[in-house]
Structures are given as structure tokens and as C-alpha cells.
Length: 190
Image (cartoon, rainbow, N blue to C red):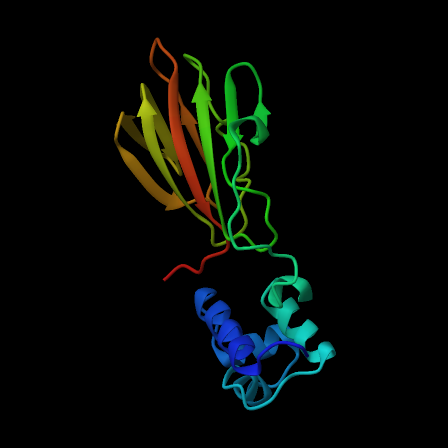
């Protein structure tokens, strides 16, 4: 490989730690032995492309992501006109983070019309298992409903929760409400 073995190994260790994986966990996920992973992480050996590809898959990345071949200078700007948008007339949202491969968190801005909600009470969650979300109310009042629990939130209030549970936000007020949501994907519960 044309990458520094020590830097590459350190990158793998940091990614593994960020996913809260032991060497054995990554070995099971990648099919690469724990002793081989340990040697790679310490920079004692450089993996073949085949092994590097298996390690990348175990870390839920493509090989180019693991090797950082698809990155530029490490800075991504999303202009307001380039935000990914969705929703309808009563619930609109804009994704503020770029659609980068391997990005482990997403920030979005939600706007709710009076009486609107982000989902129906029986809708299944949209986030992957182990995801966590933090929402920050910017304007208006927002009612947060999760697993039978109801919290009334006002401007400046935040809520953090396991977003793989059924949940939704409602606007019980007479004016528009808005909140930011940050979803960290696939983190393990501790």
C-alpha cells in the first residue's frame, strides 16, 4: 500500500474505538484475525488490499473511505441553497451536513406548522439500531412523544434519546415551531 503503515494502523484503531469495538469484535465483523488486526494497528505489518478491504467492511466503510482516497482537504461546506430538503407543507426539514460516506452524525433543521407532527404515533422509527438523537428547540413549543412518555419543550430546551425507539415531535402551539436534530448513527448503548 502507498500509505504509511503506522498512520493507517492508528486510523483503524481510532475508528474501531469510535465504534466501541474490541479487536475480537472487529475480527468477527471483518473475518481478519485479532492478532493480524493488532499487528496492523501497531504498524508492524501492512495489510494486503484484500485484508484492508475486509477491515474496511468490518468498520462499515468502503476501502477508499478507509484509505481516505475520497476525501479532499477534510473540509466540507454546505451552502444554504444546497441543503437536502424534504417533508411537506406542514413539516419541512433541511439536512445541514454533507452527504459524505462514513459520516456518523447528521444535523437537520425541522419546521413544524401549528398542529403538525414529524410522524404518526404508530410509525416505526427511521433510524438504525443504536442511534442517539439530540433535539434543540429554536422557536415555539414542541411536544416530544417517545414510548408513552410526553415532554413539553420550549425554545432553548433540549432532549436526548435513543432514536431507534418509536418517537415523534408535535407542534401544539398556534405558531410555527422549529428545532435542530443531531442524530449519531449506530452508537452502542452503554
